[in-house]
Amino acid sequence: MKLLHCVIIFIFISVSTLLPGRVFFDVYGTALDTGSLAKDQTGGGVALGFNIHRDYSIIYRGSYTNTSRNENDDTFYHLTNMLGIEYLYTVYPRLDLKGSILLGYSTTEVDKKDMRDDDGDEVDKLSDSGNNYGIWLGAQYMINQWLAPFIDVGFHQSIYNNSFVNKEVYGYHIMVGVRFTLFGKNRSITSDY
Image (tube, rainbow, N blue to C red):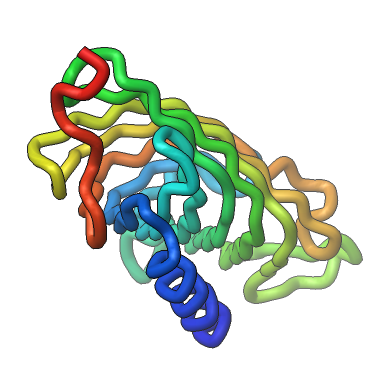
């Protein structure tokens, strides 16, 4: 998994030097629901993206969430890595609405007391990996050319084929964070007005 992250970052940096647009990095806190497995997980994530057109960006987003509160609680974690496209629409100077659609890969692990697998055997933990997708709508406010806090609210679903084949792993996904522009600049705060 670490190798995959290194390869993706290398590709983004290599491609970004050829693009006239901006390259950005997001850091965010997140809350999500994973349906029948665990409710209300919290965590964080990062995203890396670059403009392919004035209002469109390609974005890679990774997040990690869990619900473990202390040693005696059941433990759930959900890891996602997704790639997709994001659209920005300027509604007011400095304020953009965002929409994004991403596809990727996720891993979910559940460690419950007295848990049984599909065969009825007692197990310590179950985990599964598979495809996932997500759709978000949100807003960002440009403080300056390099810094923009944002909020995204959306829906995500993971599709598994092994341990969680009969489980519904989907729900809301909220992200609150800050976008840093690494290379290039955001469009002028007063553009199109």
